[in-house]
Length: 432
Image (cartoon, rainbow, N blue to C red):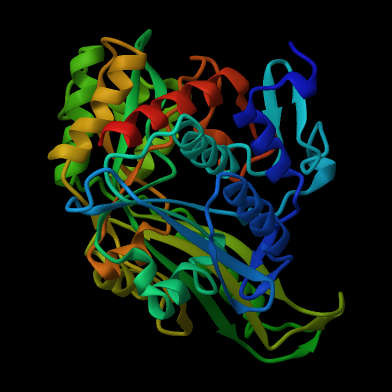
């Protein structure tokens, strides 16, 4: 392993970005992206570009720059990333999550997977072209958002509302959570993200009567809420395939010889990625927080739980109605955040160009479309009619549980995968 100073530029940039603690706890509580955005801006300025900044909320900094293409008659392409990260509990990690540690040929730290790796690939791919005196085939709109980990409320949503001119003439976008490899029955395949589930964040509220902890007390808000949370958390939502997920299952089945009529069994052929893929086949409702009480011997009169709901595109209303039925009428269901699901075609010139770029750097390896269980800032750009894809190309070791590291502990990415991704992305933006 080379010394840190000899790292490839893409790894150095990713490491530098990880060292900016841009933790986002959500609901307006965040360290802010300003310093990371200034670093990105300085990098772009070193290439002769003049980025535009927008900070609608203190320290929640967004920036964008347009790079002219060889053919101005072509629609512009957006390359975008986010600079915030979810929290990391340092005691749970084997390294400092914000130190940008290089170990075992990998870059470790919060954001190494989500998504400072892709941020670095975008920046260094642009640098590859401009330093060589080249132009992209079409205008590139290179944008970095704040607050993605909170649904973009203080980031992409405000940018799309207040700075739509940044995206003038753009019809397509590329961002995170696609283009990476997974093992399928001993073979390698790439997943290209062409859709995202809808996000609905809920608060369940239970009321009861306050009293002494020693009482016979059946009207207990904590008990009532606990029963509702357990019911939601144990609900097994049925498989409901979309056009995209049918293509996913058919593509994997063709490689492993599985039966497409049993989608979960087909997903199992992807090993550690199976849990990630199974979540794309159905609605998920995961309890993520509980708040109740203030003293051991006091029964509180209220209790609150947070639920992360991800529905297939267009299923939000029916899922909310079913959740209310499951928890019962004495539980109040509040929607704290809601966005849309997306599906875009796995066809057309951009999809073909992404597949071809992967094929030039990893010949003969199949590319399969999939619907991501989470979400990205592509949802905000969809309000401007921009079709968003996930394409952060990474050729990964078969034994690396990459999908399990999204928001997980000991997040890390192989350095050679970053170099691979930079080359593929450079190839794409040069020619598409």
